[in-house]
Image 1 (cartoon, helix red, strand yellow):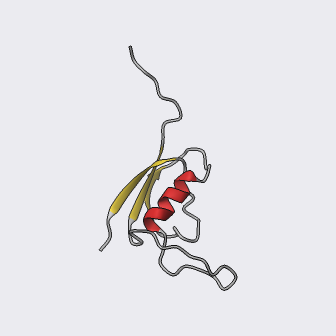
Image 2 (cartoon, one colour; image 1 turned 90 degrees about the vertical axis):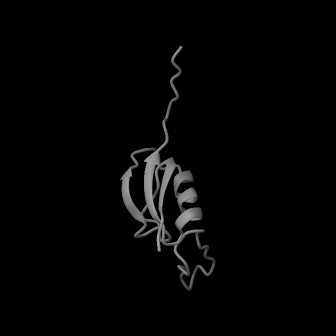
Length: 80
């Protein structure tokens, strides 16, 4: 069973080894500062995805989640 999760943050790097296959749909055109990828990994990092050179690995809280990436607003405009 998988769940759909929307991530509203900076751009997500869906080519990251822990997130391959998690992208479902995205309007993620923002700045790739790494924070969105970090948040997405906490949610959906694949289980047991490590190499012999890099033996540390994490598993997200929902490794089968479908991620929908949305970039956060760069500026907040207040209307008075």
